[in-house]
Image 1 (tube, rainbow, N blue to C red):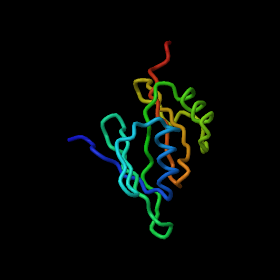
Image 2 (image 1 turned 60 degrees about the horizontal axis):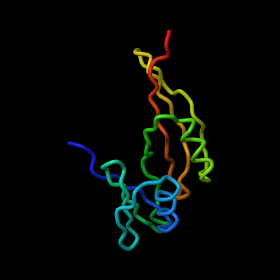
Image 3 (image 1 turned 90 degrees about the vertical axis):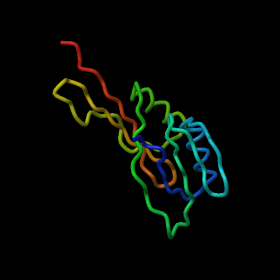
Length: 122
């Protein structure tokens, strides 16, 4: 099995479409009504508009990147709200470092960048 689709609640469809399409650069698949779909490298991201009374934050989506600092800086240039900058969260026995950084989507959801760095040369 693999993951086919992930859903997030949003408050404003047009604003969310701009953020995920223009700011994050995800490929827009289709929209009908208040439902928008984007491609996450083969997994669909489904944005579902909810009234404030029904809205709740969703799971944190972790976007894998090759260079977390460069991605973080670029998101800042694109106007994202930074929540927590790039930092190591774990080092595996193999020496691989897990790096993460957190930002907001403007809809009340938290998103993250994820980089796995190979062991440092000894």
